[in-house]
Image (tube, rainbow, N blue to C red; front, side):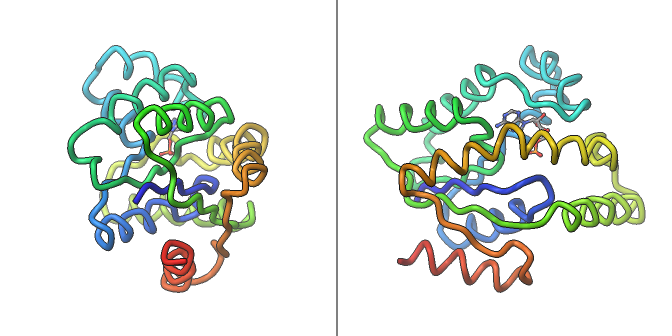
Length: 193
Ligand code: AMP
């Protein structure tokens, strides 16, 4: 099962991904998580990406496509994966199609979580407050102003990705404002169709 989960920051992609991983015995590939790991480890990729990520901008296509190209050939990806936070540009979506074609695979589903921008800002404010209350470190890019900028960036740069999948007849949408369990049910209905 190979799934692309689309949706703006705060849309609940992480929550749904975690559930799908359990249910279908696949791995979650979050380019955001991979980049954060690289930043922490101080790898060359991490050193390059750190300032870009903290400013809430997109890391270069070349960098993230390279990360995904390496990762999807790992043994634990053989049963499938859910892509969370990738592709974020049309160039990334096209590169993913090329990588899949080369390995004789295809996407089983492209699911987009539809939410409204004001709700996303509320969610990120809550995520930050919860992290502070739990004594957990706060993600630098969860700053409200940076987050608003990420949403603007999402609308500008990432919305065409959903258009790309729509034009190729692969995009399916779910109501990202629904309760978590309802969103899960809608996604399952798509995957089982
Ligand atoms: P996320 O955890 O998915 O919100 O990603 C956190 C940050 O990592 C983003 O704001 C970007 O700076 C970077 N990032 C993650 N995935 C991508 C991607 N596919 N393309 C470009 N930048 C990315």
